[in-house]
Structures are given as structure tokens and as C-alpha cells.
Length: 120
Image (cartoon, rainbow, N blue to C red):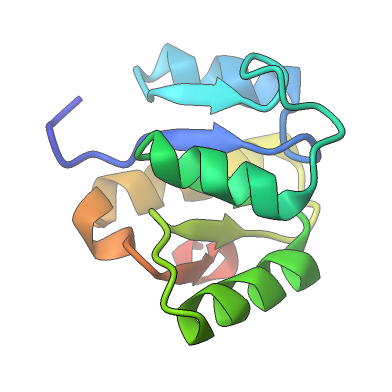
């Protein structure tokens, strides 16, 4: 792991056990909402937690995080980055996340909303 490698925070919707195992097997720094003690916490609090901890949040909740991204930027709030995806097979999600992490430094994710579909 490099100093500017994306560190992930998986919200409650995205914390699939097999996805977490696949990412960690490839030495990706992953933290889940469950591990952070934030289950059933509003999306805005999840994004705030991820940002305070320098983590890019990953979620299948595209609509809410698109809205939050827009609201935060309009209010001048910064975030560490948001990645959203459709519900896809775990191996597809893992492969795309690995491509993203390999292809984009964490610094480029600041205040950025990334659609995982761009990383096919």
C-alpha cells in the first residue's frame, strides 16, 4: 500500500463479507460500518466519519450519495471521496474497485463522486 492509495470505508449496504475478504487479500485497507460501530447510522454521518478518517466511502446507495455529494459541495463541505455502484456480483465489484484503487490516487478522490461502472 502506498501513501496515496485509496483507503476504503464500506457503508452498511456494501459490506459483503466476500467483498471485504477479496479486497483485504489484496492488501487493500478496508473498514466497514459494522467495524466502526456505525450500523443504522444516516448516510450523512457515514460520509462524515469516512472523511474524518481519510477514507473514500463505497456504497450501492447511488441516489442518496449523489445527493449528499451535491449538497456538501454546495455548502462548501469537503469529503474524501465517494464511490457508488449498482448491485453487481461481488467478483465484478471487487475487480472494478481494484482497478480504481490501482488507477487513481486518494488525493484525486477528494470531493469527487466516482461511478464504479467507469472502471470496467
